[in-house]
Image 1 (tube, rainbow, N blue to C red):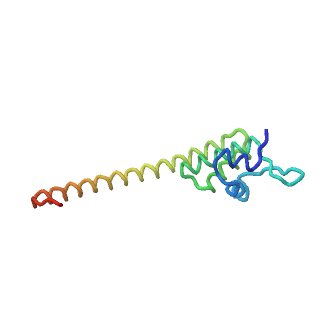
Image 2: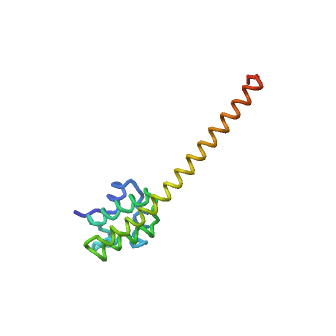
Image 3: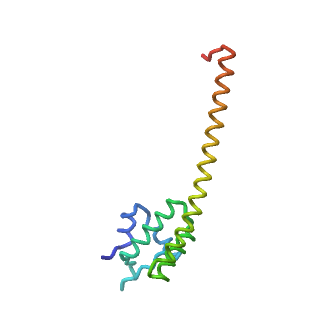
Length: 128
């Protein structure tokens, strides 16, 4: 089954410009019909799914491109999986650090809020 750029844009809820941008980056390589229209294959849909999943997980487009190209170079998928694990491990570490920073920020904010509430209660004044 093949798809037009409009069908893909609808399927993935993106603009046709987005899909053309991924084509410019060589993430997608649709064939052209005799009239010059882009024709996307099931393989292109799989690549788009990988691109959007990678973006959702915070991978850069360069990282995503490398992972896609690795599969094209090694059809066993081994190199792609190894690199995905490498990038995934790095991203998990980044997310873990970010979560720790957010938790520390929340703790500090709660402590300040509680301190301010104590000070307010000590003054015995109410706000009207």
